[in-house]
Image 1: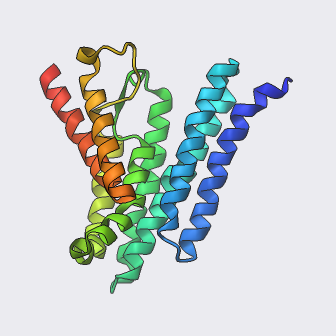
Image 2 (image 1 turned 90 degrees about the vertical axis):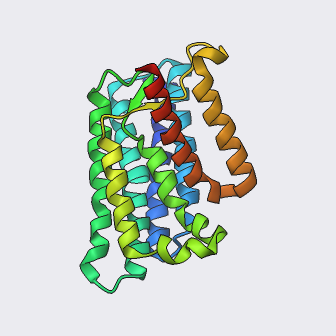
Length: 229
């Protein structure tokens, strides 16, 4: 077997490794570090598919490995971030365990994606990387706007966020995918609007802007759906 056939899978395993190390750091109390490991995993997640297409070595084992890696990095890791945040401010011990709905529904989302042929140019349900980025950067949002910190880090709020976003993961909700069949503005105006919004928010607010980017992503997708139906 040629060495090049192993390159995409090696990158996928680096995605998985990023998630595992991130989980260790978060469980050690370094909650803010979780966002960096999720971003690193997302970079590897992009380049494994890019490498597979470039080298023309796409295969079933790569598809399965990709889902397994994504479950760790974009399912278990954000679940641990929410769990640790909820546990730190929780007077009722069992309540923080309700945040673990995130890895459970992430697994369902990834399984659905593997068999759903409708998601070639649009996503159905919130992609796990977007969900993970939203959750992992919530602490940065709370730090940036300290006035929101009291309720943003409360256990009930975090449990509510976990369940709302778990539902979004598996919802029959068409969402924008940054897959361009052409570069015409008319055909891609919502994609360009999302890219511009994301760039402005991240450049001006840093990691604290990412939760707002995900909210804008959901909002723009809903508006596009209403216009096109």
